Amino acid sequence: MFAMTAMQTFTGEHTKLIIQRYIGNMTEDHLYWANSFVRKGAHVVAFGLLALVFYKAIRKRTIGYALCCTLLAAMLDEWHQSFVPDRSASFRDVMLDTLAGLLFLLGAAKFRGRNEKAKDGIMTKSS
Image (cartoon, rainbow, N blue to C red; front, side, top):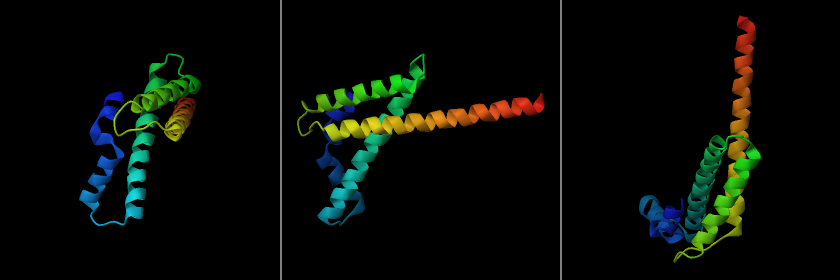
């Protein structure tokens, strides 16, 4: 993730140019919103998946530990971006990244709980 944020291809200006190339004529206002949607959507997916990786990698498998690791990664990523030309650090991005991690973790916990209940139900019925 840190390597990607250091690349010029992941700047807001570059994303804007790609959107203009593929979508065509847009007002500046629509272009701003499309760029924000793409960039913030990338944050949500990347840090949501990272939170799941932390959850899976931590032996105790608690949401709290995985979320703390996600928060730390988000803070380090934004700090790192403050040193990259044409990039800036954003507290709002840290909050978005952490919230995305929390939502993915809660979704995974709900899915896991549902699967465990289904397994218990199958085992009870066949016993």
